[in-house]
Length: 209
Image 1: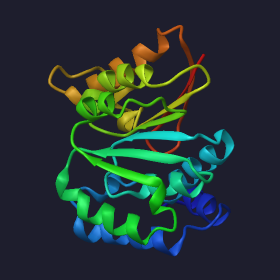
Image 2: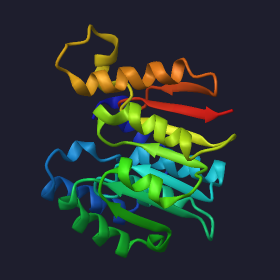
Image 3: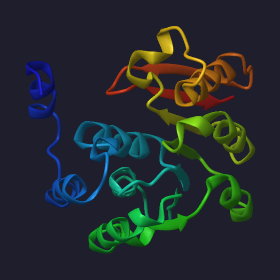
Image 4: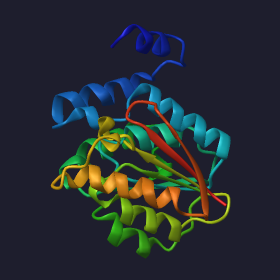
């Protein structure tokens, strides 16, 4: 952590003990633990939920549950999150911390492909957070636009992909290709407006008009 990151952490609201333990357990038990949202992004998600006051949230890509718990912390009574994770090996740690979480009853975990699950949920969402398989980001965008309405927001994580989106695209780099295609779809879609903010690996904030 460099000096500015330490400063940001020091002068932002503190991470809860439970989320700190979730991050620690993720580092101990999970391959590629850096995929976790972490303290500052988690706080940003919580604050976004408090500002938007959504009734229904869709999350594509649960991982170990940090972002879902962060968003649930900002939800009002009666509001819910549907969070979807394709890797069933991550289910035990996510469920363990959802059960510990004071807002666990606001989180509904689904295991499987979002492309299969979301159409069956038959809901409209006020907020969609996309943080799943980068190769499928274009499909997730189409999916999100089908389950949102005017005034809804879509947040897409890792949208800068370690800076690779600004470099020449390698023919076999399907992850970067998926994100580049997603960003192009958003830019060329007159149904939405957006802004990319460079927090961590970049978040595309998209408002449905």
